[in-house]
Structure formats: structure tokens, C-alpha cells
Amino acid sequence: MERIAWFFLLQYCCCMAATCVTMAAHVQTNISIDQSALLAFKASITDDPHKLIFTNWSTIVPVCNWVGVTCAARHHRVAVLNLSYFGLTGTIPPELGNLSFLVELRLRNNSFHGTLPQELASLHRLRLISLGYNKFMGTIPSWFGSLSKLQTFNLYGNQFSGSIPATILNLSALQVIDLTYNQLSGNIPREIGNITMLKEIYLDSNKFTEIPNEIGSLDQLEILFVQLNALKGSIPMVVFNMSSLTMLALYGNNLNGSLPDNICQHLPSIQDLTLGYNQFDGPLPSKLWECKELLQLEVPRNSFSGEIPNTFGNLTQIQTIDLGLNYLTGPIPHQIGHLPNLEILNLGGNNFNEVIPSLIFNMSTIAVISLFDNQLSGNLPPNTGLGLPNLQRFYLGGNKLSGAIPKSLSNASNLEVIDLGSNLLFGVIPSTLCTLTKLQLLQLFDNNLTVSTSTPELDVLFCLANLRNLRRLDFSVNPLDANLPISFTNTSLQ
Image (tube, rainbow, N blue to C red; front, side):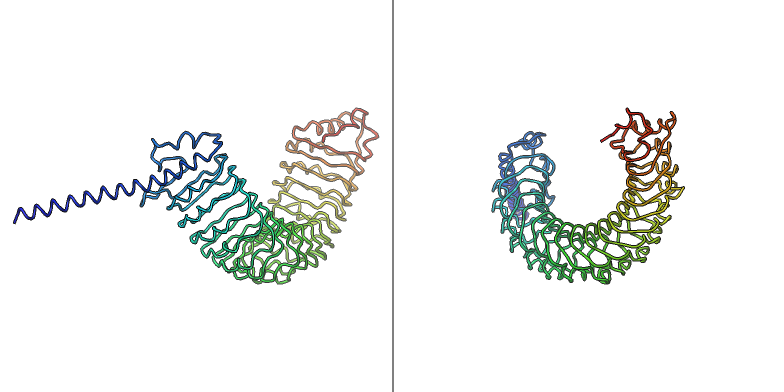
């Protein structure tokens, strides 16, 4: 009986050993397939400036230790191929489709070119593909639609043309699509509304002509970027009903019409509203203040008219207000000076009048004040600069400002640009401006500024001209020209 037991135990051990050998051989065979696929990829690379692939991808080194390669612990197969920013040049070989366990393919910021082989359609486990900033061309392959697990689809910065293939719009798991900086055209397909998991859409710098109403079905969409395209007509009203939207950027199109007054009613989470360089008209929405999370409001170069609503002072989170180059009128609301987080205020190129609210000169967070080419009048407050520790750019040219340039302006020690040209300013140029070591541009032309011929006064101009970072100094068309030495009247830094 004991012999029989030993016999069966020995037989069991032999079977287990044989099974283990078979499994090991199977794994070895599979990793060999991955190795062959990657070696074919290596052979298709014509330039490897850092020699990362040429020196490391070798049969004497285990595949899972190759640079840019990550293997899954469970199957010991290649799961991630990340060669982004390697500076590689070459093509994609069909053998890459044999990486059957590949989950992520990251090849962005290289110089791969040509077309994408259909064999990549075999990568059924793929969840992320990032081929941005290469030189791929032709139409986007329809076989991408067979990658049913794909969640992130990035082809930005290539030379793809034509339309978005309808097959891609069947990728039900897709969350991010980025086709920015290509040559795609036509309407954005209506079927995009079927990808209900979409959270981010980036289609900037193409030639799309229309946003479909079906986009309103994307109730999880957070980011919609369709800037610098050929969109025309009005924004579909469904866009203003997408409650999950945090960023809407449609800059640089041919969109027109007015914005709904209750724009924030169904956009409670909107943080970035970028609609500049279009043809929108009418008044600014009076209830825009209801967008409590708004950080960026950028609508320059449109045809908005009327006054800025006083309720803008309730946008307590806002960091950027850019209303430049419109047809806005009236005084600048003093409530803007109470905004605790404002960093950029651009109201230039409008028809604002009256005095600049003094509160604006005491905004400790502000970096850019741009009020050029309006009808603003009055004097600059004598303490200008004392409450502006972060101010870098100060554009007040092309107004009707009078009085002297405040000596205290130099307390804004981070100033890089001062534009006070084409105003009615008078008096001497403060010597304190010579302490602004970061100054790059100083525009004082076309005012009534004077200077005596005494050495200290001339020293002010010479010290300004010798500021290390100054690139442009213009004090032309001022009475001071008559009192300057000939050698200085021609001084110009450009």
C-alpha cells in the first residue's frame, strides 16, 4: 500500500513539473513575441539622437528592463510603451500590433511620420494612445473605432486631414479626445453625443464649422475647447445647459449673436469662459455674477456694447477679466476694485470715460492693468504704486489723463511695461523711475512733459536710457525735446 502511495505521489510531481515547464515555455514564447515586435519598431527608427533605443534595446537585456517599456506583473507582458520626448524619427511598423497586452502607447513629441498601420487595431486592451506632436498625416484611420476600451485618444499636433471618422464616435469608454493642431474639417459629427462618458474635448486649431446640438447629451463633459476653427452662427443653446462644464473656449471663430442673460443658471461650475475674437454683440450678461466659480472671463475683440454691470464686483473668485477691443461705454465700476483675486484687468480699446476708480490702484494681486485707448480722464492718484506690489504691466496710453506722473509709481518694483503715451500728462519725469530695474518698455510720448537743462534732470533721462532690461524708451512729442542736447533727442531704444 505504501508503494502505491509513493507511486502516485511521484507521478503527480512529474506532472506538475511538466506543467510548470510548459507554462514557462508559454510565457517565454509570449514575451518573445513582444520582443520581436519591439525590435521591429527599433529597426523602423532612423534617428535616435540620445541613443536611448539603439543602445538599450538589445537581446542581452530582458525586454521588461528596456528603456520606455513597462511590463505587467501578472502576465509579464509589455503593458506600457512610453517613448515620449525621446526625439525619435521613423515610422510605426505593423509588428507593433502584436503587443497584445499593451494598455498604454505614448509616443508624443517625436518625429514619427507616415500613416498608422491597420495592425494596431489588434491592440484590444489599449486604454490610452498618445501620438501628439509627431508628423503623421492622411486621414484618421477608421480602425481606431475597434479599440473598445480606449479612454484617452490624443493625436494633437500632427497633419491629419479630412473629417473625424464615424467609427471613433462608437468608443463608449472614451473620456478624453484631443485632436488639436491638425487640418481636420467639416462639421463636428452629431454622433459625438453618443460618447456619454466624454469629459474633455480638445479640437483647437482645425477647420471645423459647426458644433452639433447633440453635444448637449454629454452630461459629464467638463472641458470643451474648439478655438481657432471656422465655427459660424450662434453657439447652440444646449451648450449653456451643460451643468458639468468647467471650461468653455471658443476663441477665434466666426460665431455671432448675443450671450444669454441667464448664462450661469445652468453652468454652475464654469471656471473659464473664453470667447474672444468672434462677432458676439449686445450687452454683457447682467447675471454673469451668478457664475460663482468663474476664474477667467476672456471675451476680447467682439462687438459687446453697453456698460459693465456693477454686479461684476460679486465675481469674488475671478482672476482674469479681459473685455478689450469691444464697444463698451460708461464709467469703470468701482466694484471691480474690490475683487480680491484679480490678476489681469484688460478693458483697453473701448469707450470708457470718467475717472479710473482709485480702488484699482490698490489691488495687491493685480499683475496687468490695461486701460489703453479709452476716454478716461483725471489725475493718477498720488500714491499710485504703493498698493500694487505685483503689478508688471501698466497700459494707460491713449486716454485723457492729466497731472503729473506720481513719484510713488516706482514702488511697484516689478513693473516691466509702463505705457502712458498720448495723454495730457505734464511736469517732470520722476527720477524714481530709474529704480525700476525690471523695466523693459517705457512709453511717455505725446504728452506735455518737460525737463530743465540742469544736469540732475538730464541724468534722469540718461539713467532711464541705461536701464539694463529696457528695450524701448519713447518720450517723443513732448515739450522737453526743445531743451535736450542734440545728442539726446535721437535717443531711442527699439
